[in-house]
Length: 172
Image: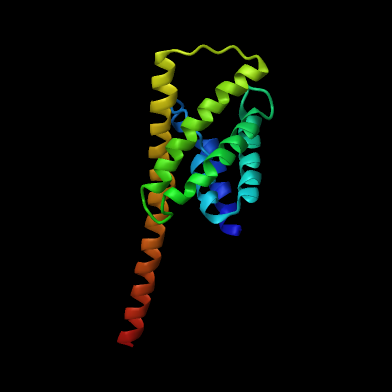
């Protein structure tokens, strides 16, 4: 559980600081974290993490009502959680693919929430291309770079360090 908490803090830091350096990116910063939770936790624990993640995004969002992202992330998690059995956890491509799906589904759920709350919204081909293809691709690349490759690099460095220590003991 401490590993997930540290990953949550990492996702929070990325959500706070990446927009400062890349303001043109519109990323669901907690999507990869929630996908990792799918493989490490039960559905009820994942829903709590989704509620927490959505609430943090709600606190920093000025265009939606408080609780919109929390409900969105919970509904997306509820819908997408059973699909974790279709992908292997240890594959490098799993996190980007599932993050792509999470973003697309979250966008579609957000439209429904906009309709329920009375927020004006217009559908267009430009919107579909941007919000259902380009943003999910950005999130998939973000998941690959910030989560998959970083964890792969950390595990590689740990193995290299352990092999170095083992070889050094053999020489002594």
